[in-house]
Length: 133
Image (tube, rainbow, N blue to C red; front, side):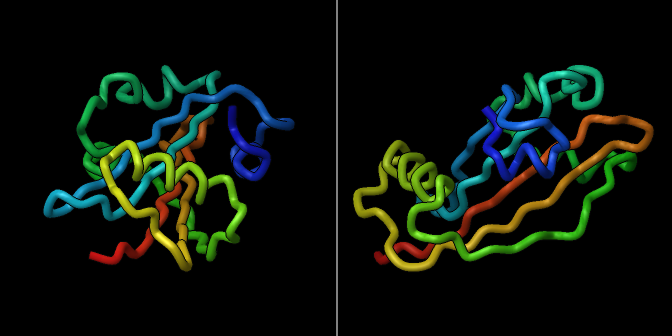
């Protein structure tokens, strides 16, 4: 399900089913960023045909090569302690094998992507955190 704030940005009435992709980006064997992408069910197949076959490839590797893709200005936030993306990030990090959960501030940025002449927007959110070694 798309969350309420995502539904607003995507133009969905209320919380609706959507295609969601969550990935943990690793560097030097450590999780560094958790990415959360959401696209409407209707139109996803025609507007974002690669969505189902990305596998372990990065979404950015596809988005930035496609000259028809346009990105909105970036939106930024410091996530409050009880924000759902904080919970999702902690769950993703535990699944990635991180033994200690990040404490302190978590920042997020997100942008809306669209392909020219298409109608289905894609919302990509990245959560950044600091992990003590």
